[in-house]
Length: 322
Image (cartoon, rainbow, N blue to C red; front, side, top):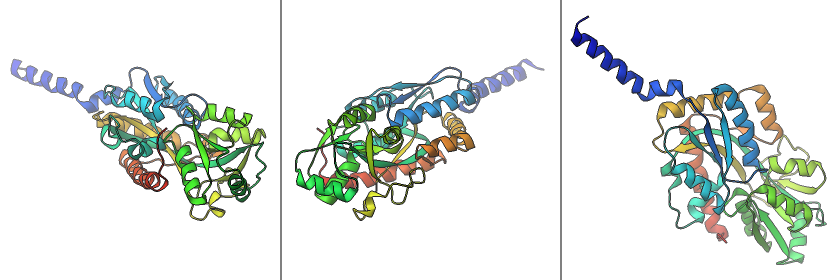
């Protein structure tokens, strides 16, 4: 082989080794940080830990959940957006990311522009739960109770701008109920105060409330999905009483923009493979989750559609960040 040919061969091999696709074939080579913008105990945290365990097994590297709550989801989101676009930092994308686009007027980022959709995970209904001190056993009875006690009903949320917040604001605007919004830093702290009777109602993501409902510590009045929830068929829909009411939560994975497409494709494939496993599907179904597996582009469409939907709710309800 001539020197010229040797040099040409070396150059070609070097370029191939440094190409995104070649690099992605070895990805990951170290631990991946998965930022959850809420404290432990809520649906986002539970979902992330279930998926992180499975991805750790299939990827051969630790997928480490890091809780970064605060500022209505924005602290964790900004952390990911400003991280290196190398595939080693990802975000648990959730409804607040779509809602905040219209709820906050001076965000330092544009979520649709600055995040790369990776994979959809699940969609879950919220559930309207009340403290046991509230006498209402149905949605209709709660509306009566609320109107008989104007300004005395405290409505918890897992943070301003979350789906639990806007689900409640939508309920307020459609029923005329006068409730004071009390934002918490996640579902865990909100559920503690709801159980203790410090707040009266919470439109929580179903998975985090299920253990408390089954334990009799709080009472469920209805689910916020359009139809009956298979994992909780005994519960009516809120929309059966409040015509036209519907609100669901959705979750997925995002990475910083400019993350190599080959890396995104590999993570997407691993997530979709995990979501198709019968054991994992059963576990997620028990939590009220329905898979929204698909391509990165499919998840991007979910983000765009939900951002547009909740912008209308924010405007109609007059919701503001406290």
